[in-house]
Amino acid sequence: MEKNIAVIKGDGIGPEIIERAIDILKKIEKKYSHKFNLEYVDMGGCSIDKHGVPLTDENLEKCLKSDSVLLGSVGGYKWDNVETENRPERGLLKLRKELNLYANIRPTKILKSLEYASPLKVSECDFIIVRELTGGIYFGKHSFETAGNMRQASDIMVYREDEIKRIGKVAFDMAKKNKKNITSVDKANVLYTSKLWREIMNDFAKKDEYEEIEYNDMYVDNAAMQLIANPSQFGIIVTENMFGDILSDEASMLTGSIGMSPSASLSDGSLGMYEPIHGSAPDIAGKDIANPIGAILSLAMMFRYSFNLFEEAEDIENAVYKTIEENYRTADLMPKDKELANKYQKVGCAEMGDIIMSKI
Ligand code: NAD
View 1 (cartoon, rainbow, N blue to C red):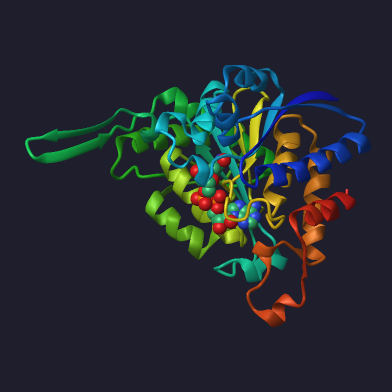
View 2: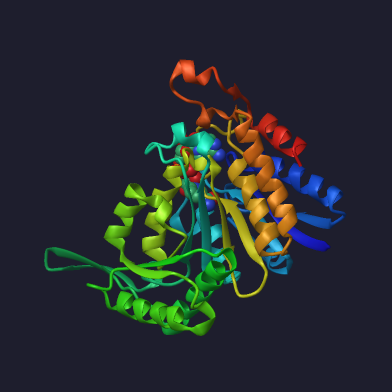
């Protein structure tokens, strides 16, 4: 198979973790006789420094023409005082909009051997959050006004039927493929957008093609509680933009470190954008201590969701799990307890990447 991949290393720890993912991509390319043409693209703070904007039209075009995009992370202290319209994150928003990436997929898998690192000591769960990414309150009309001496602000939340239907289809198809149950999260007891959301999700659940899927509705406040109380009940959680934003960050903490979790943002076609869920971690950048696993597992998601290369994706995932089982740990995964820490071999970002690569 031949594919063109746009690679955005970005800022902070972005370049360090993406280099590890690229090593693994090259190993897979050789082992399975594929050809991956890589096009490196500047985005974020590094693009502001070089080109004056977070994403140039030329670089956006390179991403649009690619078969998929692999991203590290953008942002950092250096650009904190840049005006809002030109901040590094603006490049990311532009890319999501132009690629029409409306479905954000975040798997949360807890490995038994990392139970000690999970703040809740959760030992097993394996679920996926499917978050609507381009509608809802973040994209509604915002206003901030002063009437007399009273300030008033509003954010309007709008969802159209077609926006809910397309994310519902992504979630139900995924549940069917992975034999997982679905929980649709809303606030239908208060919000009209949630009433519409619930009606449409219930219509999906009644369709013949999805009859084998176990389905339930859950209010968002309960979902926030259930994620802590009993996360193993979930298979797929499908939810709107803001609820998904909050719940997926909550879920990421179950795994023990933000450095472990990958994500995919998908559109209607096969083109997707794949990135670890964490930011650019400027506090640890350039020290060779970042955890590259979120980036490496994002690459595995690219193989699975954009290229249908399932064996290659599993090969990468198994190499990661084996490395963890063999007790290799980056600093973020080291136990605080000194006696327990003796059980593990502390490694840097580059060494972690090499060990994972050696298991493919
Ligand atoms: P962050 O995720 O960068 O860091 C939060 C904490 O987690 C830090 O202590 C950091 O050291 C640690 N951490 C993050 N990734 C790690 C890894 N792979 N291995 C080990 N430790 C890791 O969040 P933040 O500090 O709020 O944001 C820093 C910058 O990143 C900001 O400029 C923010 O805007 C940007 N950001 C970018 C993205 C993105 O590119 N998609 C996402 C979130 C934040």
